Length: 309
Length: 252
Ligand SMILES: Nc1ncnc2c1ncn2[C@@H]1O[C@H](COP(=O)(O)OP(=O)(O)O)[C@@H](O)[C@H]1O
Ligand SMILES: [Mg+2]
Image 1 (tube, rainbow over the protein chains, first blue to last red):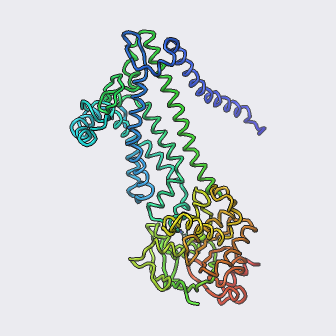
Image 2: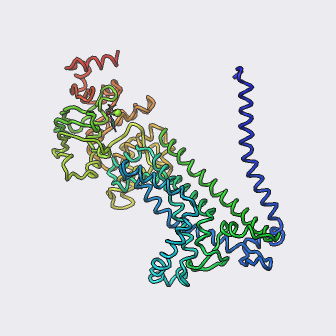
Image 3: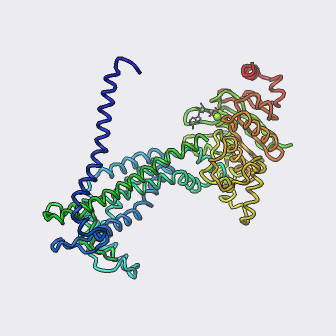
């Protein structure tokens, strides 16, 4: 190592280290700043902030539960719809489709992921909401109306519409990751199944089993995106801080309430309440995304182990 | 003994590239036939012709006739799943599923619905593991992951997995090439044992191995079958000059 360039090298390394350290510093600073700024509500309400369901900024009552509820339920709806579709597309792309078809479809899926959120939101207002109000909603009420989930007034704007929009937005992401993890499953696994008399479908199950932790990672990654999705959801979910069993009722998510109210939040406690919710969302998505990373990384390692054996 | 497999005038193409040229070959029942030849000469391709594994390659094309038990396996109405059950395969790299030892062996039995009860399934798994000379080493850890086994054990597990569906022919593509000498010796002993019940075709790049375990040897070069003969004759007094050069080159 003792060459003439040693000084330049260590300078270079030093600069890079500073850059890298900056990232960590920014994250830590963000958490510290948000924690500091949410101290007023943390002191005032304690854990009650997270479980309280009253949200009345006018009288300084802040319960974040409707937003937490709205965030979780809309994300769950999104995953329930998006995961099977994404799995189906990814399996089709990797296991079934000839290259000439798979490549353009994969390309289009990637393009979908790049459409700005606000465009999805507009589409949600002008296409999806009327569709749910006029077609999907009545059908659901007709057949599943006995479930509290599908009762109540149908405006087209509400939890279900928010969840569906999110589903459409996370599908490309989940599809892309699942496709990648299916692609790294070694062909020797497919060969092994086929040589034992497995059908195409049974072979696919073996491939899925090989990729299971990566698929779990893709789902969790989708969850992370759904939790944090803001613009499109704000445009179609109705933005009402309420907890209703009906998916047709308007709801509110953490991300939406932050986006919609930050500008007008001049009151110290109001601002603190919003920031505390931001902190909650930050920590949850941080953990969720970290989990996704670990799971997806595990796949590459797992298949390597299988290969070496 | 009769011929289990009869190949006549076989040509094989990967797209425009021809990989096998006009191959005719008879493989007798309950013998070990070894395929030898320089790498890239088409041994694996030919092996995969025999259980139609090349079907998965969309641009592959085949001409000629391949008969097993007198039936042309490339006829349109051939049940490929049944064919692959009858003609098992063991690969160069051991490829156990990410499942337990038990579930690996049980896999083929389950998908082909061969068992009548849980007990029957367990018995079939045990028998396959015994036939693959692995039972004593794994009987106490059947529910544990197959990846916990050594390389040689994993390969014998793959053999057990193939045996469990009761094939009649076993195709092996350099099954010991990634194993140490002791594990290799175990596989060789196993092959000799298995030929009592099965017809075995084994690809090997190891001439001594072919000499030790096979009854007949087929020598391939550049996609052509140069010579087939009883192994003893092949290694002492080959008909073809090319065979002699190849064998002596490797030995010398
Ligand atoms: N999937 C494939 N697509 C195209 N060409 C192939 C494929 N598999 C093998 N080949 C070619 O066919 C020839 C024979 O290969 P192979 O049967 O693997 O030889 P061997 O097993 O004797 O080493 C080689 O030239 C190889 O490059
Ligand atoms: Mg080969």
